[in-house]
Length: 365
Image 1 (cartoon, rainbow, N blue to C red):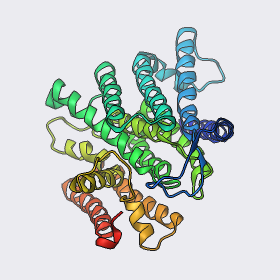
Image 2: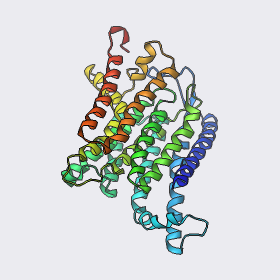
Image 3: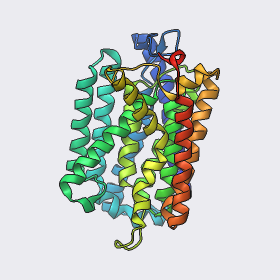
Image 4: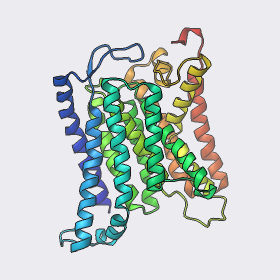
């Protein structure tokens, strides 16, 4: 299965890489460009449509895998395919409706992003569509967290979680290479959790998401040749959110309080993007401004104003995300004392960011 995981990452990487290259040419030909604005750092018009490459890397292999699973389940596994794969075909076929529903939600986010990148949908309308898509996926596909709270509470909390994480990566797409790189790190952390718990279905999707982010990142790392736009950032945020819910982090007895470690694992893994979103929204609300309208108050922008180059700022945030992500991979497998240390580490990283974001009048933008 290690070879299958590497193959999934490689396939998604190449589809995303070459798909992004073709999307770049298409964006230039059709005028699908991001023009300089007050809340963006780029000084020249840059091709959009990078999200197309990301979606290709996730959706095409997913549909192919589901189709092959259905054929092989009905007619038998070919001799050149590992017998281990045959053991999971029944489970894959059983979960195909779930997979198609989740993919439909991702495509819905992608189409919404394409329209918003070109014409602008308006912050409130776009947020309402996000709640609609996420709510339908949670309700119809039974993608739910904290089910012990009961179905209504679980549906509401999960919907808000999906929307929050989706927007976190949309907000994080404010600097070359930032959203895709942070998403790759967070995806790798969730992949470790999925692999250690033997989750083939979720692990395969995480491999595709990881490969897609890395393939796009080669075009987007500073200085970026193309942007992912909302058509990409909403998609990677959405899939990370959904897969963070589907991943099982705890396998012990239900009466053990250690399930809390598992429940908090995705929160720790995604601590940096979530904190950036919460802090920026708080700043905008404090200034009585629309929290969904972009500005230059993000952590990344603060680092630039302190003299860092774009690359150094991006790498700094990568390192901060890695620090919390590493702790998240360990969290489900430790006792209370070690869990407290991991929480302390994540808190220290967030407080470090808060100190770097503390500002005087000269930093206001």
